[in-house]
Amino acid sequence: MMKQNPIAIASYSFHGMHKEGSMDLFQYLEVIRSRYQVHQADIWSGYLVSLETDYIKKVRQEMDRRGLSLANLCVDGPVLWAPDPEQRQENYMTMLRYIEVANLLNAKTVRIDFGGKDGDVMTEEAFELIVSRYKTYCSLCHDLGMKIGPENHFGLDRNPDNLKKVREAVDHPAYGHLLHFGNLPDFMNQMDDLLPIVMHTHVAANSLPEAKEIIRRLLAAGYDGALSVEHHTAALELERVEWQLASLRAILAEVGQEGLDAPAKPDYMQTVYR
Image (cartoon, rainbow, N blue to C red; front, side, top):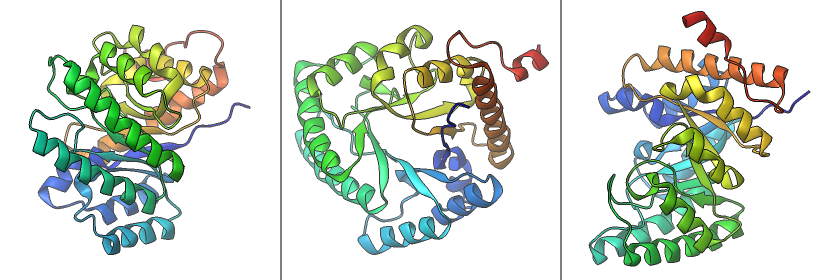
């Protein structure tokens, strides 16, 4: 029987509740373990109220108490490239602290984006700085048993050519990619180039019609990391995450039954909704 990949739930899935004050980080940990029976956390940095060691140790204690491990620390804020040199240096120092935080939380992977805005051109200056920073971060993370890399998320790292150019230049075993399902200009034809270095995933709700084939390709390429539910609507989040999680579990069961050798058949939910 095919080995089952672990499932995670990204804390960003509840960003609407977090914004209104009805979901903090500790409530998130309890919800994913008790309500959804998931054992892998995927923490978005927006939930961390402090980077102080005492607070981070408390988070780790609560994770351990629930038998949770951290599949990914998803860092927003200290992106690698910014036009202002002072901002770049500040981001660099902040990210060094986030790597320390990831180690305290025993994270398997860390996501930090290139920077820029959608449609921006990656200049040679930006490219050289991004590569230099990642080489530093990779060296640190490798020593700590973690991987680090971007997500096809926004800005410069939603361009497949940029992703290829950077990963070839960094060329480090600790460099990975967080694969956000569907979030490339021509995702189904562009994702295969990323498969060898995928370190973590975000399975968005709007990717579910293609998710079965994406997952089949991932697993056929040897991916053994977590498949993480990430919800984005900021409405009815408890219920919609439950639906999204159930859909992912059903898809994984179908992939396990059908095998990895041929393109995935339409999943059950698609046949029902037609």
